[in-house]
Image (tube, rainbow, N blue to C red):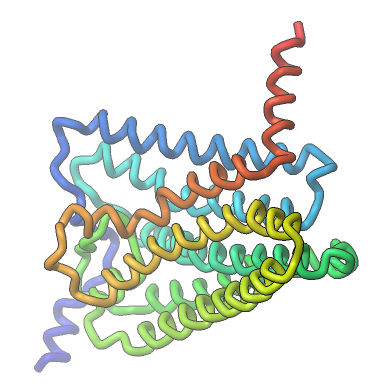
Length: 317
């Protein structure tokens, strides 16, 4: 009887309703401007640093190539969220078409995986620079850099592509998503039957991505700390100046992702409803701005060049 009921109620979902939006009709323009300003800042900061790194040959070093890849990922992740947020803020009916919702799922989840792997590769780069400075340029050859950037991008795209395909294949018995944006687990919960394969695949891929990244990060930082304690004052200063923004970025991103995973997998309905709606978007809204600001302020080569370029532009007739 239950299977027959599912067959009757299963429909081809064309649109999803995002049910977490509050009635802000009196402040629509205000919220729209906040989201728009945040998005403009994210795009502006990341594009600025990408251009500075690409234009200046002195910055064509492994660390800056990985930073450039990281900034591209911030643009990629924010493009998957902010245009939708801007449209939904102005809309009375918070609906999104099924193809766009699945595209958003793909972008949001692949952004998270790429971010973790980027931070892992950057920690490996810092480990080589601090612990093996004499062999650094030999090990970090152009071919190795291209290979590591490929490792950052291609596995997440393949893994999340599989997740999205499995979600697309589901037979759904609902269309209401209790979120501000489309997340994979929110759609899986609408399935007419137990989506065991989807859950297992998503958990395994998430586990492998996070474990691989954290293993590299923990190992490299243990080696860096060992060198810092036994090395000179200059070595310690170099380690602190290069690793501080990386650690801050890692902690900030891990906090946001951890909250989203906990909220999607466990019942956290006892907490404040506003926090439940906003915090899952923390890593998608704050991280893309946090990274360029944090790294931009700490890159001793980049900031003087930005200031120099502005002064040069101001002096030109």
